[in-house]
Amino acid sequence: MAEKMSNLKKALKEQTDKVNAARDSKAKLAGLDDKLKTATAAMRKGAPSPKTHTVASGDTLSGIAKQYGLDDWKVLYEANKETIGDNPNAIRIGQELKIPK
View (cartoon, rainbow, N blue to C red):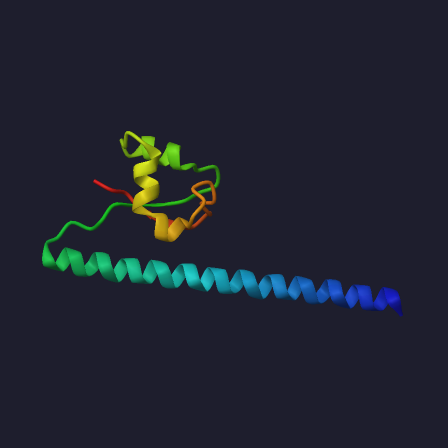
């Protein structure tokens, strides 16, 4: 009986993880759709679309800053503090960071 309960709990956790992964994917797609709409509207107006960077595995703020020619990662952090939160070391894969000019 205990083994059966353990197996059921394990199966439930696996299903819960799948549902959460699906929700994350849906949220990312919604975010990309919003970005596409914003970029399309900007192109129609003739305005340049803002430069952004999607955080990938292994990215760091200092690495991203160097990639875009910024002198200091703190400039990147301050521009994205609302997205990143209070801990600059807590960037997550899939986050869209604005690249300041």
